[in-house]
Length: 309
Ligand SMILES: NC(=O)c1ccc[n+]([C@@H]2O[C@H](COP(=O)([O-])OP(=O)(O)OC[C@H]3O[C@@H](n4cnc5c(N)ncnc54)[C@H](OP(=O)(O)O)[C@@H]3O)[C@@H](O)[C@H]2O)c1
Image (tube, rainbow, N blue to C red; front, side, top):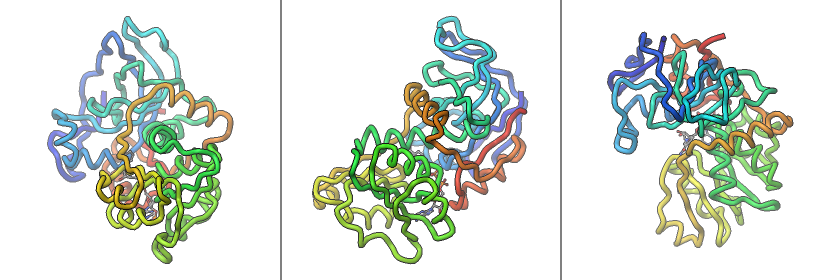
């Protein structure tokens, strides 16, 4: 099969389209014929080797940790899925990814694809939406009536975070630049703040900050929180001493595969309550261009890799 792999860490020129063997599913895995994959910033961070101290990948490595496709074989201990099922997943990031014609994934990490979404839209959901779900619902435990500040509401994670926060009944502030104001308001945000023009540090008494940016954005977020507020970060580990100084709690979320949450996300999508915006689409032999788009930091939704029709 064809697979986009790296044999070495570094820039986009390290991405190579290789012919490799189709993986054989183990007893707990399903073999997925990949329809679509998607690009997340973690893909090029791993390509560069930035996450090697944490993930210790061995090479060659197939990148891409979002998948939609069809089950074509199952391990003998798999009882929750069958051949022919249309599925989607955010598979274990420690293993080979989905920039490939086939991917073997642990059945516990796979759910039925939302039937109302295209293969492309479905591949855009798992990693980004699970990150938003786990950060906002599980870690921050956002409640109805609370005020949440979501940074980069126009990003892939931010777009799902806005929608999940609104479904919970929260009041949503979000930062983005003015070209994305309409987009974030269309997803349900109550107020959009142009971070390039006005800044957000005048906000006060926020219950939850969802920090998808880090650096100065995180530093300027502390003072917006009320006493006892919560900050959840996904790019930079928040400093506990700083959190304590402001009388708030701070957490880091590293997204985990979760079949149950994927099932709930599929229900929301099929009920018309979760929209997926696609920024751009590429073929398997165009992964370098797809990474280039992600690396700009300007994407307005999901970057999709179309693997097979
Ligand atoms: N820890 C985890 O498990 C986890 C999981 C998923 C993602 N992440 C990380 O979270 C980050 C976001 O991921 P993503 O997929 O949502 O990225 P993305 O889709 O590439 O985000 C792009 C968006 O960010 C906005 N943006 C850039 N700088 C901004 C700023 N200073 N303030 C407000 N908005 C800004 C851009 O809007 P403008 O063009 O208007 O600036 C653009 O629409 C990445 O660093 C990713 O690696 C971590």
